[in-house]
Length: 71
Image 1 (cartoon, rainbow, N blue to C red):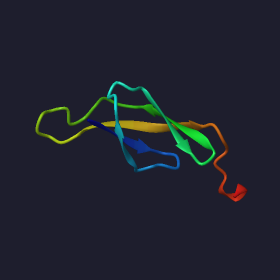
Image 2 (image 1 turned 90 degrees about the vertical axis):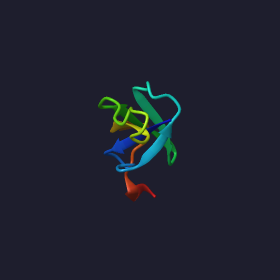
Image 3 (image 1 turned 30 degrees about the horizontal axis):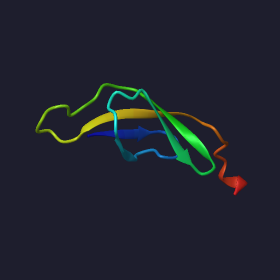
């Protein structure tokens, strides 16, 4: 199993499990829209004994405005 490490955007610093380590983007539900994160690096910790594989993803865009003042 691989883990996506998210940077930037509203999910900055979060880790989420991935079904497919070959993904180049993640589209995640958020509020009434979606967040799009793009892969920014190679997989880390790919050995048998160094923990879960981690892949960095950076915030790219959202499908809805993220202005908290709208609530």
